[in-house]
Amino acid sequence: MYRERLVATEVHSDSARRLQYLLINYHDFRQRKASHPLLEDTFRVADWQAERLKLTHQDLYQHPGYHTGLEFLLTDLYAPSTMTRRDDNIDRVFPKMVKWLPDNLLDTFAGLVELNLITQQLDLDLTETLQRHGVPSQGLTNAQYCAAFRASPGLEQRHRQIALVAEVGQQLDHYVRNRTLGWLLSMTRGPAEMADLSDLHSFLHRGYTAFRKMEDVDALIERLVTREERVLDNILNRVPEPFNLPDDL
Image 1 (cartoon, rainbow, N blue to C red):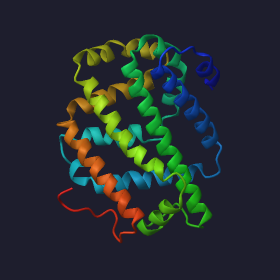
Image 2 (cartoon, rainbow, N blue to C red):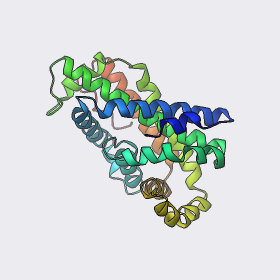
Image 3 (tube, helix red, strand yellow):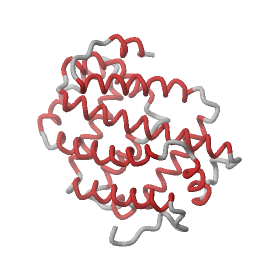
Image 4 (cartoon, rainbow, N blue to C red):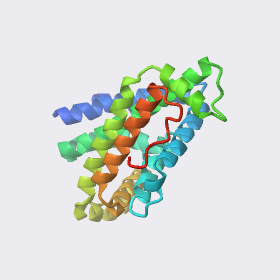
């Protein structure tokens, strides 16, 4: 919808160019995915994986100091079926973003876009692999999921996906410690609604609130990354119960 605006915007830094490149790729992918015959199946695969993440990290998910942040990660950052307006609005305000935001914030936005793009691409690859092997996305078992995971293209992107979780999480934690950001989000609620950006503003405010409530984000990210790297290795090495991790992880 806003591809021409993305392409036509002049950018003057590496950070802005990276964000522009990723937004164009993400825009094109979203258009292709929206008309894909397996669209609904990708949502079921995403839901399956979100539930798997909750089970793998159940102790962290139920921890009062981490629950809100992990819920934001799973429902807002990893919710491809509900964020179309948010993504369109990011495309729409891109010219203003590169004009007014510093490069470090543009880099953080770029990391979020890349994480969302890679995650949804991997979901689609996995869904197509399931379809090729005649495995329905409903009632998916661990064994069926792992077999399709190993047979899917882009396995090297799995490591990048995990690295981006750490990178973006640490950057977001840095920004929310600045109380000025919270004040700005409160002050801009009205103007955002007038500009039809309320969904984007709400997303930013939920993220700010979630990370402000979290305890020791560095420790949380380290545990998430360590566990997910172990799960990835377990799947690739055909460990019988790949999602069952030692208690000390």
